[in-house]
Image 1: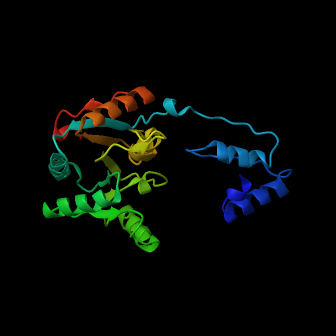
Image 2 (image 1 turned 180 degrees about the vertical axis):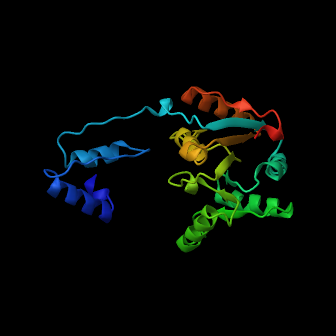
Image 3 (image 1 turned 60 degrees about the horizontal axis):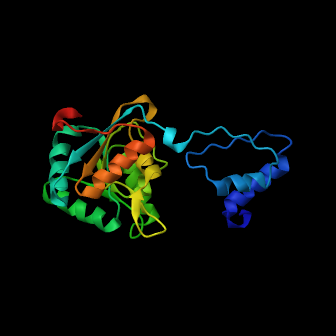
Length: 233
């Protein structure tokens, strides 16, 4: 496993190994996996871990809601109407599962008069992505449509609303799709940061959306309630 690490990680571990009698090393991660643990154990005989089971994780400052939509077009209409009353000076992140739908949603909302920006991999250069994040952070961009690219590692107290235009899913070994529990938690965790309150809003359209939402509720032992009105935020 050591050989699969990046050069920077190898240098860090080499330093830790050399200085291990002189320092205490602490590792923190929201997505600590077995590969990382094996790499650490290559250098340290004794490893103490404090961990929380994924199904026990909660986001107390995030109100989780869902909205019924009859079609993908109905989702777009709902988002446009909801943004009219909910944003103010706050920032909004809209998560979409595939890059091509990021562009389609951007075009659809712009036709309705909304000024939106996108953040994704692929065609966007690293420089463009970094500039987009910088402008979003300082308030020059208010509404950002993205993929899971922004689901981790971005902390900003001004993000008060996260919309899952699509519930995150992952493909299983047998070719089926199931909820991506980890990315769901990371997505809605972009709001409600640093003790602030936030909303995670899920848009449901097809039967499998409702099945996946129920699975997410069961997995995290939480309740995601139906949105009662546009003014609920």
